[in-house]
Length: 181
Ligand SMILES: [Zn+2]
Ligand SMILES: [Zn+2]
Picture 1: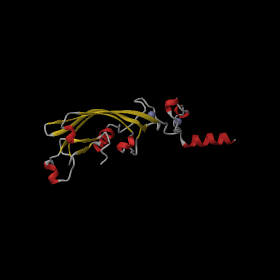
Picture 2: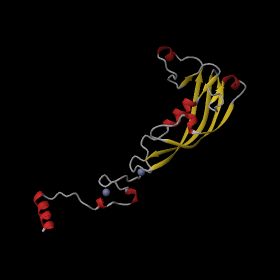
Picture 3: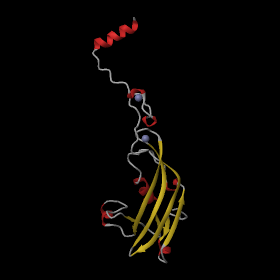
Picture 4: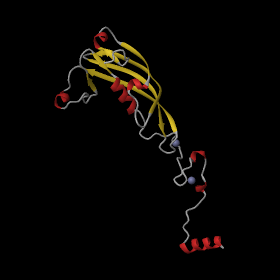
């Protein structure tokens, strides 16, 4: 375990009092390379660690910036990601864990072993959960024209004027013959 990471905390040290951690981390430190989003800039914020009864709790706020693609116009957009983090750890295995091998029980309490807690996986999950499922550059994004592919945010394309040609077949053929004459 990388004990120099600001997301890794020593539980014995914490017994002497709360520990506030200022965060300013590269996204790669949290393994934030995912398919649909690219985290740019730093992950910043603060986590305040303390013992609450027999649980270790970290409360704080995290900020990051994700670069994503608008689903309508396909332009790159930057999305600020801000989360209120609430992480709870216990060294007691939860009852569920004895049945199925899960690290997290129903209350969102993560089980830890030994003297160290590594919060990176939980922080990563918090940030990824905050990403929009349907990223939009703007609520009013007009998207691309389905016919010519023009970005309609730049203004209407020529297709906007053209009406679908629903004239009967003989008229179409007639106008074609006219053109050829
Ligand atoms: Zn868009
Ligand atoms: Zn068009």
